[in-house]
Amino acid sequence: MFSVRTDLAVEAKEFYEEKNKGKLSGVEVKETNDGDIKITSVKILNDVGERIMSKPVGTYVTIDVPKLTYYDGEAMDRLSAVLGKTLMKMIKFDDSMTALVVGLGNWNITPDSLGPKVISKLMITRHLKQLVPDKIDERIRPVCAIAPGVLGITGIETSEIIKGVVNKVKPNLIICIDALASRKLDRVNSTIQIGDTGISPGSGIGNRRMEISQKTLNVPVIALGVPTVVDAATMASDTIDMVLSSMIKQSKTGGQFYNMLKSVDRNEKFEMIREILEPYGANLMVTPKEVDMVMDSISKIVACGINIALQPRLDLEDINKFLN
Image (cartoon, rainbow, N blue to C red; front, top):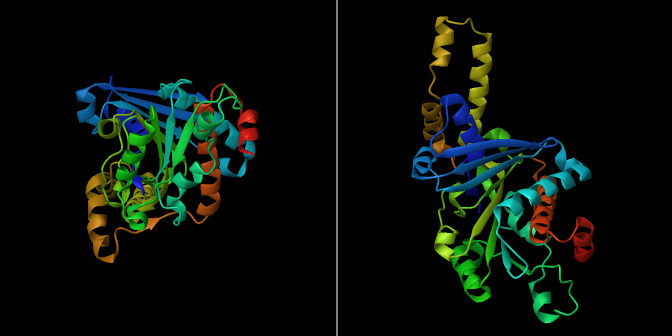
């Protein structure tokens, strides 16, 4: 579905450091490290913060993925553990409650298949708690899942499918997983982003659908996504920014050429690039060539993190036994 996410936690920290010498009113920014994994958390506290950040009141977390994680099994397990701990802090969920995990996206398009791939690796238990309650471990919590597909495949709005399932199943918590369209080239496949204010499927490619949130479903919604694509205009803009930065470093400070480069407005430049590309397919989305391997790895990491968060009384070995 390629929901759009503005890398809010990271951008808020950058905004805080670059534009404000003191406290950012209505916004709380916190950065921590768990080993080599950086976690940036942003809490929008009130309507003042909403206006500054253009996002609703809530908590937004960005977990940086260390380089080469997707090639290292131990690193993947560490990242899953960090993701699990982060999710546990954001959800209010006990043994009597039911969680519904929704895998958004199109399983036929590799960079958009994150949601369905995660669903296939989850520990699904709701049916067992209902059908064989005496034989299932009492430590296990009821979890169900759905991969509703996309409008072009089903002919049904994703939000309509989810709402129907919610009305029938009556979960106490919803976790939505989706691939994101990044606003920065260097954040593609390099961050895991979590928010407790819901998600708007398809908005990353201009197909805004009804949002999936507590406001629309009357159930708390945690949105979890990974930027897997970037649009052509963003890629071109970031490339030009890198060229400008390199030229500025090599120019004489205070010189005419230096001042001209420094005066370039980055926002105006981006809009100009978008206008120029419009006749040539400005909606082109770009993803790295190793996307197949990355999607397999990141789906395992995300699924494992969700399993840890929803089944805190089980260790990873128990969860793996259940899945295998």
